[in-house]
Length: 227
Image 1: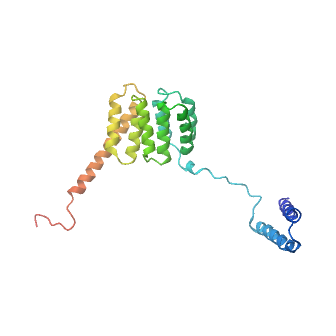
Image 2: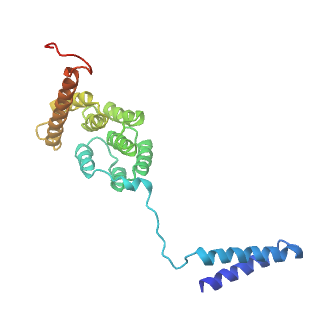
Image 3: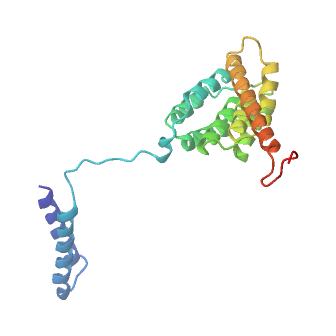
């Protein structure tokens, strides 16, 4: 039935061109031949019975870190009223749709510009959209949240995380150490923050050891003092 339908459509097209578009009689044969040529090409290469294979959005190839979403949820919800927007943005983030989540959060911020939780979430989605790179837009979002709610743990935590991913370990440690110092003993994120600080200290120690080994190594071609 598919091929019959294709032939019918071809004849309809030819009829429209002749009757409606006033195709000259001298062009009838050429036009008909062109339509039949197209149908023949589809008959050779087309696969109308093959099921479709829709492609997933590009950003779906990189899914969000569920742990970080949960961490932000522990730190949020107490500094704003945009919970419904955050739920939608988190759902998109879990699917790896960081760009779409950022757009949702921008619309939410336009309605509630003083919601620190929304600014923190926007900073996270912007960092996720660039695969961990701290862009000026993301840094502005975190800083805006910190200015609105100086006691909010989210801005220093996630800004430190982005800095650590960029290799700026000392800056990240400063932010996290300051956050830990002012965090309540029963804060739900405190244990995770302590663990991350220990991991960061280990990385910095290994980095310093490697740098010391490189600096202490003799230069190529240098002669020993005992020779």
